Image (cartoon, rainbow, N blue to C red):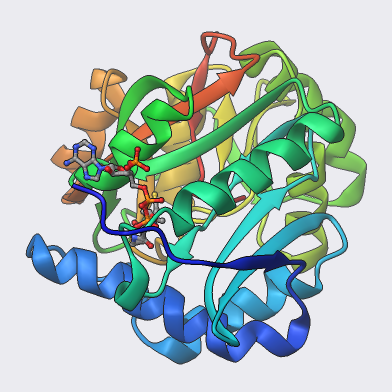
Length: 290
Ligand SMILES: CC(C)(COP(=O)(O)OP(=O)(O)OC[C@H]1O[C@@H](n2cnc3c(N)ncnc32)[C@H](O)[C@@H]1OP(=O)(O)O)[C@@H](O)C(=O)NCCC(=O)NCCS
C-alpha cells in the first residue's frame, strides 16, 4: 500500500543539483537492488553524480526535480534527442518512496513529452521492481517485451563477411536509414552524440553499412539488418559498459549466441512504451537511456 502523500514542489533541475541527485540515484537503485539480492546499477554515488551532471547540463534532456521541506528528494529526465522520447532515470529518496513523489515526476515528464509532441515515449523497467511496474502500468505504459541485461568478458569474435569500424559523422545518414527500417523512426540525436564522443561503431556487410551501435553498453543502443550485424558489433566490443548490454529475450538466436560465448544474465527488464510503437523489423538492442 502507498504511504501518505508527501508535499512537494517541482522545478527544473540545475547542474548544481548533480551531487544530491547522484546520491539519491545511487541510494534509490542500491536499496531496491539489495532488497532483491541483485547487483546495484551504479557502483558509487560519484558514478551516479557523473551521469546526473551530464543529464542536467545536456540541452536536449528535460529535467524535473522535487523538493520537500527544502530538501531535494527526487529527479526525473526526458531524453528529447530523437523522435521517440526516452524517460528516466527516475529516482526517489528511499526516505520518501511510496508516497506519490515518483508518480508526480512521471506525470511531469509525460506532460513535457506531450507538449513537445513526441509521438511516443519509451523506458526500460527493472522487472524485479514490482512498484515501478505497477506505477508505469497505471500511467498507461504498455509492456512490449522482456530484455536481458548481459555481462561478461569481451567476446572478441569476428563474423565472416562483416567489418566493424568506428562510426564517423558521414555515417549518420545511412545509420539513420537502418534505424528507420528497423524501428520506423531514427535515433539520430543519440547517435550523433555517440559519434562525437567516439563510442559509436558501424558494421559493414557487402561494402554497405548494415548496422551500428552507439556503444555496447547499458546506456547505448544498436540496430542491424540481421542478427549477424549485431553479433559482429557485440563481438567487436572491448567491454560491455555499465551493468551490461541489453538483449531482447525473444531474439532467441542472439540470446543463445551471447550465452554460448560466456555472457551471463544480470537481470531481466521490461521495455515499456506509450504512444507510437512499431514492432521491430530487424535486429536491435535497446538502451536504458541512450
Ligand atoms: C520507482 C520509484 C521512482 C517510484 O516512486 P515512488 O514515489 O516510490 O512511487 P509512488 O508512490 O509515486 O507510486 C507507486 C505506486 O505503485 C503502487 N504500488 C507499489 N507497489 C505495488 C505493488 N506491489 N502492486 C501494485 N501497486 C503497487 C503504489 O500504491 C503507488 O500507486 P498509487 O499512487 O496509486 O497509490 C521509486 O520507488 C524509486 O526511486 N525506486 C528506486 C529506483 C527505481 O527503481 N527507479 C525506476 C527505474 S525503472
